[in-house]
Length: 41
Image (cartoon, rainbow, N blue to C red):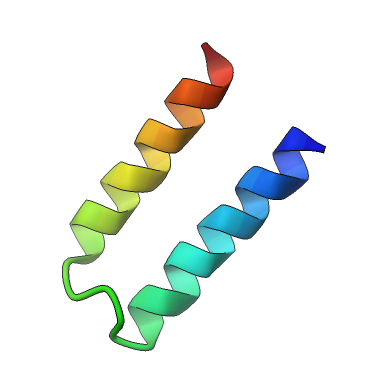
């Protein structure tokens, strides 16, 4: 369940960046990595 949720979050970040909603792609990726780290702890 958690894995599915995190996958959806990553897809949302990726699609948003493709659509130009996230101007700083690196910042979005950092947010995703931070999210995964919080889940694993």
